[in-house]
Length: 178
Length: 456
Image (cartoon, chains in turn orange, purple):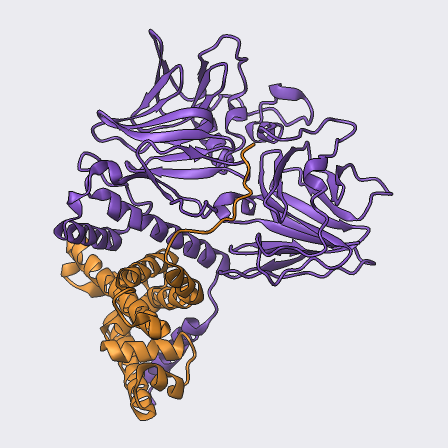
């Protein structure tokens, strides 16, 4: 048997990166999962986000505020995934160019959440970030303001407008179905 | 507010509630997290090694993953631009040890051409080759990897490996032992190199074996030995040690599916058992000490070192300490019917067991009797999927670290999060504590070891 009595060390990813990964991976995954609604997409988002971070870690100040960076990266990457679905729907099937209401009708009410995800992806990036922090992670206005460097009032107004936009999407969707 | 407005508010509220709900499966999340970390661990190698090995294609990503491929390509391009191509190709890694295992200081997970790779007996280990192939190595393997004229060649000096060859676009993957050469273009097979000869068995696909002037083609379920004195073994015995044994067996079953359903398993009926999964459980992988039947001999060299007044912080966090009048040991893996132990001094011991029904005490391994000394009693479940540990005649605790895993204690499921963490279940001597550990989590791939601390 080969002896294994040497003092051993782990050598894989940079220690600092691995530490950040272990601390924040769940946060990133949760963000991505709730935004995309898909475990597979959430895994892809997590991998993309951390790969970018791995590439940028030595040069950036990510290490100073990793949570803020990772949240923003996760939210934006996940929203991009949702946006790309819209393109896939429009490009994969030519008949959908005629009217995407056909697609909506064919999928029924169960796709309401998908409609809302797309509406979320259509919000301005900052508004979407605020929205996700509130409703996915349950942050208060004050906490969101601290994380994003924005005032509490701005957060409240942004959330109000975002909810209104989403409600409008629902009404439009319902209107087209009638 | 109109009815339509009310409805939109209700639907939006439902959506917002869903956003805030807990994740439906934390287990799935942990698996995803582990996969991502593993992929990222391999990433730097592929970027580095891509430069200067123009003849070899990139390793195929495990999953559909266009964004990373794009970033990887960009990074490779950047590396080329800064002049990394000036490095000689021989200096570039041709393979990488993928497991999150411990390696010696000064060593690297990256494997250069011709570098000798050895494995110990603490569980199987995986090597990722430059062409995307995967080599799983059992304990006691010695091999090296080099470029061949039209692909990659693994020189296997000793031990048993299972190769999952990537689809070869232009070349071949070769495995060479002292007396034969195996060439493939995309398949799964096992090669074992022994002092008396070599044995090749095929799990999936087609393999060409060249032995002297003899050339043979093997199909799934077929095997060949280069020495007539080497007994023909059940193919499953060659792969029972693998982390993916169940998957390989399923693959083999699919490739060689008989017309009639298999007969029911009869425990103890010997190698004629047609149930492949059951047969795997009957296989003894190479071990330091086999189950000798009636009386299990104790391994004094190993087990005498269990006794410790203070646990050194080398295996696990310094926060752990063996209480006075106690001892500790780790289970580092279970493969088929072989269970591996480790002490805090890094000494290892592997033990073959029929159903792993035995007790580990400071004096060694023994059968459980009413007078058994304080220790941890183990038993493998009938389906081989879990190992139950019970504190015997003493209180004990159990911990895991550096992994995402779960176990059941007295019927309640516990889980670890990511990161270096562990939980101790303090036993009440009056109430025997039972820990049930999924054997799938006791593989080196899962990064799992379990530490037991027993107080007399």
